[in-house]
Amino acid sequence: MKEGMRMNRLCIVVPCYNEEEALAYTNTELISIIRRLMEAGKVDKESFILYVDDGSRDNTWNMIENFHKEYACVFGLKLARNTGHQNALTAGLLVAKDHGDMVVSIDADLQDDVSVIEEMIDKYEQGYDIVYGVRKKRDTDTYFKRTTALSFYRLMQLMKIDIVYNHADYRLMSKRALEVFSGYTERNLFLRGIIPLIGYRSTIVKYDRKSRIAGESKYPLSKMLSMAFEGITSFSIQPILMITNLGLFIVFCSILAAIYGLCSYLSGKVVAGWTSIILSIWFIGGVQLLSVGLIGTYIGKIYIEVKHRPRYNIETNNLMERPHEES
Image (cartoon, rainbow, N blue to C red; front, side, top):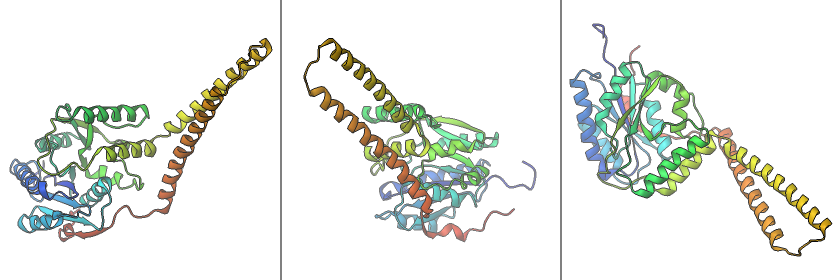
């Protein structure tokens, strides 16, 4: 680094929703890591933590305000209502890009290992704009969660969606990568699919995931299934192509059945029965309903996009007290 030039400013963005049980521990750990990085000369002394309160109903925001008063490196962003993890994270990233050179996003439960942030910064210094945190293994997961998670990644790959295997939302992004990301204005957010589309130089760092210290997981099975469906329908038309191929297959089978029926009639071996007919009708009807429902989902997403409603509204942002980065 040339003499007179400042070091790179780091911002750690932490989306929070009803995290009062875990937040004190989280804040202590993040302040410790950011101070250690400052002392090691890895980041600028103006580096900071930005908590994003996603419309929490508990004491989360009050705790963030108290942290802000107590620590100069802690700031808070409060959304007007609960908008979901992906929108809250996006809000934090887009606000942080105006105040930092590199931004690390991490969940408030700190199951992701904060110690690898230093390794992420080293990768950034080597010229990488995006550094993905990737789990080494899933030993801490239950058998059901591990199986469903791995199935999710395989399904994404089957649908031709470019995502990083075993990566959630623990990553470092450079300022210029965030500038490009700000141009992705879609309302149906699936960040694990959007970030690879940026295309800048990227790499991974691996870590062991920890057990949750306190509180409950904000991603039960229902939300995981919802995210999987969101990812598939937001980034791939493979389901529609699969239905088209299924329709062609059914037409082919119908032609074979018609030929078989004609041959049976000509040979005089006609067997009276209605079961096969009823089953065929039910099957075709089910395929049609499924097809209409899936196409309706895509149309619904188009409907949401064309209205161009804001993804979130910011109620309070004490980071505005901080001056923007000098040019």
